[in-house]
Figure (cartoon, rainbow, N blue to C red):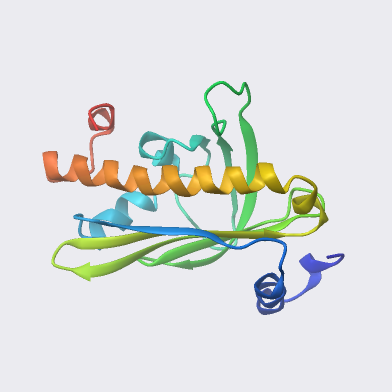
Length: 182
């Protein structure tokens, strides 16, 4: 675990893939929103909290490879009184398809998160969320982190369905006032 940040990206991916610290938390949802329209909205990270209830706030206006992604999470349960700040480096960005970031800010923990969008044709998109973590910092609080990853996955997929409802009702994803309806 020591020195993982000094390894190549492909080596970090290999080490995480081989790690038995956790299984990936992953899921997809198919929505009736054309992929190009979905991605145009999705790439505006500062709007994530409008449709994805796991986010309290996101600082970045857009996704840019190599940049720091800065945000704060909502608590995994409403009765918990915290907002969790987070920051990660965007290590992969394929416009219209996926964005991946690496979390190394938590001591002794290394995690990767990927959001993906797959064009299914006929105005449909498959939206996905995938996350896996490892390291002693992860293992120390594994129950919390697993619950957190499941929360992020669920709220992200539910949020994509919220966008589908908005798109069906308005033919666009453009007006933030519509998010209160969905």
